[in-house]
Amino acid sequence: MSREIVNSVLLLWGSLFCAVSSLYFWITKYYRTVKRDWIYRMQVSTSVLLFWDAMTNLFRGRPDLLGFWMVRISNFLNFFLVELTLLFFHYYICAMLLTPEENAALKRVKVVRALCCVGLALVVVSQFTGLYYTFDASNVYHRSAGYPISMIVPVVAMALDGSLLLQYRARISRGMFLATGSYLVLPLVAISIQIVHYGLALVDLAIGVAMVLMFLVSIKEQNEAMLRLETSRAQIAEKLEIATVLNRCVEKLSTGGRDLDKATNELLGVISDYFAADRSYIFELDRERNVIVNTHETVREGVSEEKDNLQEVPLEAVAEWIEAFEREGVYFLPDLEQEKGKLIYDVLAPQNIHSLLAVPLLRDHVVTGFLGVDNPKEHVGDATLLSSIQFFVTNSLEQKKTQERLYKFCYIDMLTGLSNRNRYMEDLSGWEKGTLREIGGIYMDLNGLKHCNDRFGHEAGDALIRRTADALNEVFPGEGYRIGGDEFVVLRCPIGQEDFADKVHQLREALVRHSVDAAIGSFWQPLVEDLPAFLREADDRMYREKERQKRSARPSV
Image (cartoon, rainbow, N blue to C red):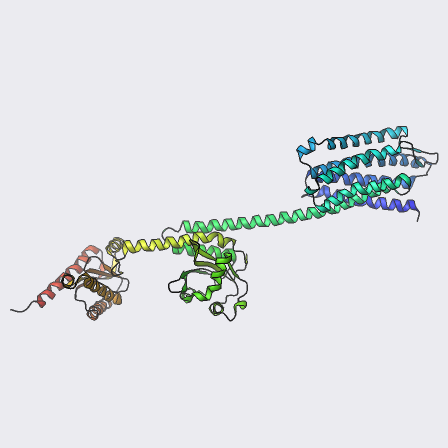
């Protein structure tokens, strides 16, 4: 195979590669930048350059009319496109390396562009004057005396571009520096060889190789940029999802009103959905008793509720968790089997827990509990949401405790633990709004409280009152009111007449067991529309019994 054929095949292959490369840069939707526009022009220019250089090889020495024109056109385009590609390369590296301000201010940039324009003009002049080359009668190309000018002009421009590349190399990747540098080094090496030996189209081939390298590096960097973009999009989407869920969580707590338990459980439901978890829960630490208590729990359909079974878990069972909370701010258990042989394994295994994720609840940098999920199937090991919501959960729990304290102050009798007069009056207001069926009422008054206080002191009197409350709670747990110093009330609705009578009898026996002397007035009605009248009747019965007790206690004359 002749040297001309080999040369032409290499050139045509390079032309095809650059054509495909330029098509890629033209149709790509991501790589839409100034840099992309200039590399696209470089690839087109190089593709045409290599094609016409191949035509030069194929038609050189043919004296026919077609050969005559093809050789002249191809030689003109070869020289012209070398200068044009260099100009495109210059704009390409300026787009990569320089800011718009630097691009406009640097003198080297202006000199290179001027040299490229001069080079293009000289190629046109050479076409009509034989400045660079001439043709003999056999239609064979020969260099003329001015040929070195065609080398000097681009070499100076390339040297200036090389200085830019070296000065600002830190602004591009190592791969791109080497690829763009190859466009400067390889043609210079080819020029050096062709000055003393002219055979293959070494300069054009060197440009083609540089274009291949720049294409490959550009694709690599584009793919890396797209990967970063996709990663960034995924991270943004995840952050948006977390922000959306966080807003829902905060909304649940902020709109919970007085029912903070309900709001907290709804929040746990949102958390369970986010993690696709079997359970989400809150544990609170009781350091005085050295236990943890499950105070809130939400479970997925088909998953067993374990809250009632987790009320007195020894604190030592989660000692490692507490250490992890204090050290890392999160505890992630990817596989329960790694805890085999430990106390926590015996606690978790019966609940069918395989993995869990938890974050601490902190108050003044002290762990007071934790918020967690069991068997998460999404966002596994990512505690971002839980860490973001822990403050609001801690605040909600503190708010609940404050509400409970306020409730106790407002509605609970501190001495007995019974509901106080405020609670009684509020409950009556609610009961008066409708008709009551099968209601039983009890008014009870202690006998001898004043005498006990006067003779044995108020501590003895307080003890008598507490014993009365204990007796009341034995028979009517949570249903008694202390409405005065020695006055107590019970309201039960609905309750059958016989059941109510039996309860009253049990109360009398309980009072005896607790050494309490009291007058009891009880009243039952199947239908009550006037609650105040009903209560007055019970109160009157209590006073009538008290009078009977007084008469029976008087000594006979």
